[in-house]
Amino acid sequence: MNTQTAKISTHPIVLACVDQSPYAAYVTDYAAWAAKRLNTGLELLHVIDRNPELGPDQDHSGAIGFNEQENLLKKIVDEDEQRSRLARESGRVFLNDLQQRAQQQGLQQVDMRQRHGSLVDSLLERQSQTRLVVMGRRGESSATTNRDLGRNLESVVRSMKCPILSVTDEFKAPTHLMIAYDAGSASRKGLDMVATSPAFAGLKCSIVMVKDKESTDAPKQLEQAQQKLVAAGLDVDTQLLIGDFESIMAKSIQKLGIDLLVMGAYTHSPWRTLFTGSHTTDLLRAARIPTLLLR
Image 1 (tube, one colour):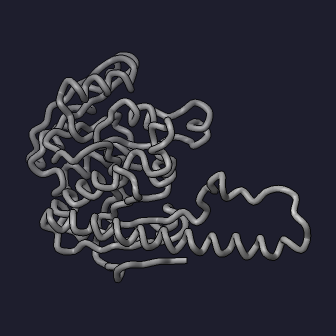
Image 2 (image 1 turned 90 degrees about the vertical axis):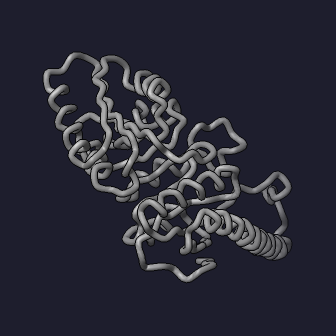
């Protein structure tokens, strides 16, 4: 079931995934910043879970007589319809507030879309128009748990072809970005994007490569990466560091005053993520700054 609150644009957009958590305002602010720099429209997307968890007062389990089943079924259907209606109405209110917030930052085209169903499916429907997806590192469902990362982030990154900007805190216009560079396909993609996208014009850039041991190829790879960005008119420095990837990157982010990280994400087998974890997840937990994730 689709619930749309505005006509869907066919022009390039920045797509902001928002829910009724404190992170929605931060997501909207970063998405508005990106849309202005990319000269695109902004779409605010709110997806209502089709299978919300039931509260303790909604537990209908237990033995019931045959004659009671029909009444119970009707009660469940009525409760579902009421929850759905309340969710839609509540969603429209907070989407209107976020739309006004984005428009106050000077954006003219700010559309809203509300849907029941899967976040990934909703994003895939808009993939051909989407230049960038912006979402919170945590969402409504994780706000009351101890999870560092929202449950949707990895599935969205794995599903979408466009970059994903994962944000963590109140908006601060980026001035100094870091590229976590390993000369692999995803980090080369990030290098190309930083060199050509108006989103990064005028920002200082640090390219950081971390190795677990000395490498004869790394200095040349870093030099080539730096030359590419310098040719694009960016102010660039490089660092080649030896040691543990996550801890060194986290320390470098603090030392250099980085406020935007660009990195490849989940580029290895999902089986490895399942059994041994992921550099991406570990660094996202450690970095705590907006991170642009590339596949």
